[in-house]
Image 1 (cartoon, rainbow, N blue to C red):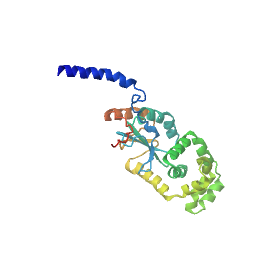
Image 2 (tube, rainbow, N blue to C red):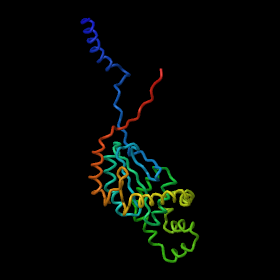
Image 3 (tube, rainbow, N blue to C red):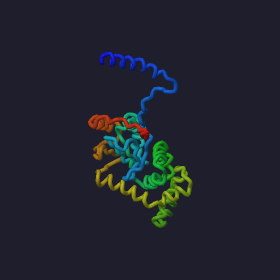
Image 4 (cartoon, one colour):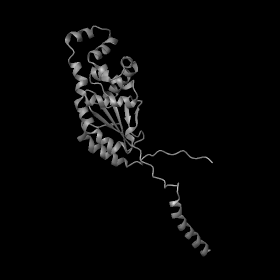
Length: 251
């Protein structure tokens, strides 16, 4: 029996290098980790979720497209969140468009008539070129404003958006833009986000953040959010990095 075991062990040792060197059979490479920053989806709450939907830590931002502080977070904080936490699947990030004013409300409609990825690209464009989004509305004269107010309610928003050059800023084909701005479900979603933020979570300013459903009081920038988010991730532990699974072969 000892001789048989020794012979078997020797055969295995000899076979290993031969198999490794066999042509046409390269060693299997380890599966690459998933980068979750490329996953963007619309949530039931009307937000845009980036990352692992099953992440143990869920970060939600209530942000206004016209808010300078929100723009600052997107320039300074969000890139760090994406690289440090979202990419690995440890944290998911959801953007909910909070309407502070009419510009927010009109621009917010455009998030719901495009693919989630295109909608997120529009959010990025709005923050990157926030001055270009806001300035045309500020330049609308009193006579034009009075004329808009004389219109039926359902025509005021589209007319004001046209005067504010929102169609040009959006980059959408005119027909798609007009259908988007007239869509009632988009208005309902935006108003539901606002109501939930204020009445349920006690929002007092933008940006505001939820971590696992809890409003972070007096946290309006990355400097204040960073240590809280890091502590939440540490407390939750590091989740396994999800990898795509290959289908099983049937014999």
